[in-house]
Length: 319
Ligand code: AVJ
Image (tube, rainbow, N blue to C red):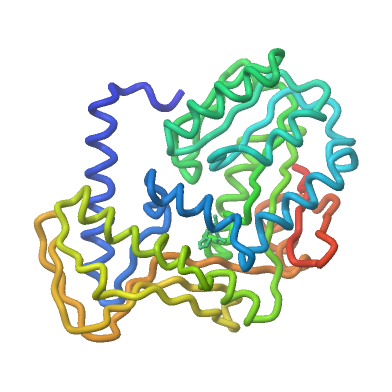
């Protein structure tokens, strides 16, 4: 099992992983920072706010699918004993599935946030007294070990929120292949995938009028200041979200508004005016495009659901 080191030691490892990634990312000719670092305590709070914004449709649309089609989605998964969620966060969506999976006895949320996992365990175990919750504190992109007792159990994976969109299509295929190995034999996966649509609607979802997404993006620099003794001037950078039609993805960046330098992790970094730090990609797929990626990873396409407006898709994949 993952996550057995001492708490103080773990925190140290997390800080040095962050430091190493920041130094590496800001030393490149085209600067970038891994998007997983957007989600510290403050970032997770801001992300929760994003999910309630009028412009940010994915969360609402996926909830609509899960609520309206819950019976249909869970039918066909009657024999599932263990539910494994990748990057579970607050796991609000999961409860809709848990409620209807009749044979379910174990829920394994995998997340890097220890706090979120602790809260989820408390909430779910009180709401579902028959259910055992065994969280794994880990980055779900690194192959985790599931408890041995469920090696032969029928497993269902759950990967909502279109988090798969944060990966390039090649990375997405590799991640889906890893998930298939973890969930096999007899496994299935329910995965949320944001659909291609009008680029205005897309960019608005990632650059809202209230500036919550801007604050979410800029918090990454604030986090560097807090945790890595950084000296970023937050007013010297602005948020930008652009839809790249050819790649089919939204790119979030932080743009330097002037020629400037900033310290981070004991190093000095230089930014020319208009230089960009790439912070997140969010790939969008048509249904056939996503099925092709899943097929590359060895998954068979199952059922697929969309919300009424046709903005978001939920795919069922079968091992
Ligand atoms: C949580 C990764 C799915 O890409 O839509 C929202 C993150 N970034 N607004 C997304 C996000 C800016 C979100 N995911």
